[in-house]
Amino acid sequence: MADFHTAAAPPLLGSTLLATAEKQEILQPSPISSGSHAIDTEALDGGYRYGEITCIAGASGTGKTLLTFQAIASHLLTHKEGEVALIATTDISLPRLKDVLVNRLTRQNRDPEFCESGYMYRKQVATAHRTQDVQNCVTSMLERVRLSRVFDFPGVAEAVGEFGARLDAHDTNDKARSQGVDHERLPGVADSEDEVESNPSPKKNDHAYEGVSDARVEAAEITPNSMIAIDNVANVLGSMMTKSQLQGHAMLVNCMRSLQHLTKRRNICTLLVNAAVGLRSQSTQYQRKADEQVSIFASVSGKPALGKHFSFLIDTSIFLSVLPRSKDDAEIAYSDGHKASEYEKVGILEILKDRHGIREGRWGIFRIREGVEFHDGKA
Image (cartoon, rainbow, N blue to C red; front, side):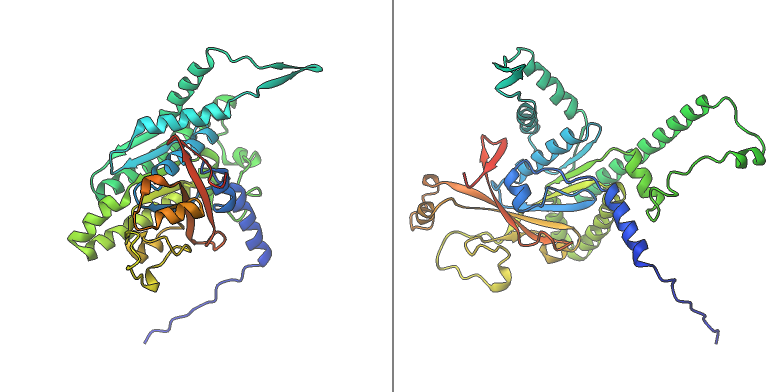
């Protein structure tokens, strides 16, 4: 019987692991805003993270689409060359996305009412062309949104693969372009190995990013930050699971692993919109089982669709719900009449799962204004 010789892996110093983690953190882009200051500070710890998959689940009308559009707006405003792959399995409203962009850009570029002029303050006069400038900027940003309409889960996987191939092609073109510039700058190229070795070219990864893989460094330095938004994964996954649960689960796991690899390799901010199941009426006769309660609020029913196993394939799980704003509103909402139109509501965003464990259990309140922006639900 053959002898198998094994050797222990070389130990790693704590200082080396710390240096690697710090340099990976340098490569990590800052989180992008959700469009709500209250949500960013109270629940998301700054916003949605790049290099992670975030799933936003909730019933219809809880604000899932607006949260997605606000995140897209934050990404386009923050990264001037960043692209967005918007993969839609439903009839998504692009005019609403345009309205969100116009709203965000108008608020961002809004000049103060008074501006300083020497020792005096004069009133800022609005110019007629400002609105046209906003429209031109919005049109330019929408050109960086690549919309794909799909009708099944293989279509989702294909759209994600095409976006990843596009990013790879973008890197290849940039490398070729940069090499061409370098060759034009040099008067000549040495032919012998001795001349090449006597003038070695500096390697950017030798010191600045020691401990970080070359692929991640090149992706962070060359490729602009990107975003993937899929709305709604439950539409295509639900039908696939109904036909064959075993085959559907296997396809789901393979696709999600590929998406996770692409997300981490490219530092992409990936958002998945999911539905909610287990919703109920406000009947007091309903008895909820303990294992069905996912929200910290006792009056919130339902849970994210696609089951518990899906939560292991993502990094952050967000659940949206709607509750009465005040005690008086709650008395109206939970009365026998269920007069839904006669009380005010607020949206609740909860972090059900965070792979790092930092944000899990946190929540924030928001209200939707005119269908295009958030404001603090406590106000």
